[in-house]
Image 1 (cartoon, one colour):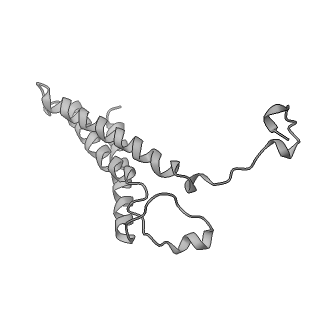
Image 2 (cartoon, one colour):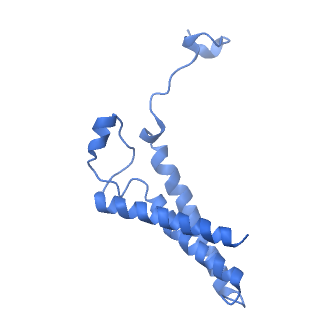
Length: 134
């Protein structure tokens, strides 16, 4: 029976279909961070450009904090935008846990560790610079 042609009862299991894949197995899990990370890099680059083109440049404390925060955001956002690319092509934990990450994987353990460092360092520094503005 077509579910869209009748009203569904909340107790009727035929009205609800279970998701076929968990979020990290879909292409969205690999594509969305690439798009948002790229936008963040562009935005932070524009902030740096505006600061360096201003009359005061880096002579004000506010501009220095914003400059540092933008640099840290660029580091973290590039690492986030790479999503699954630095991940090892073979990950034995996938077999143990029974899931497979989406996206192209071209890296090894060292590139994955480097990505994790830049995400943690970039985002941590960015939040600390943001706290300095308060």
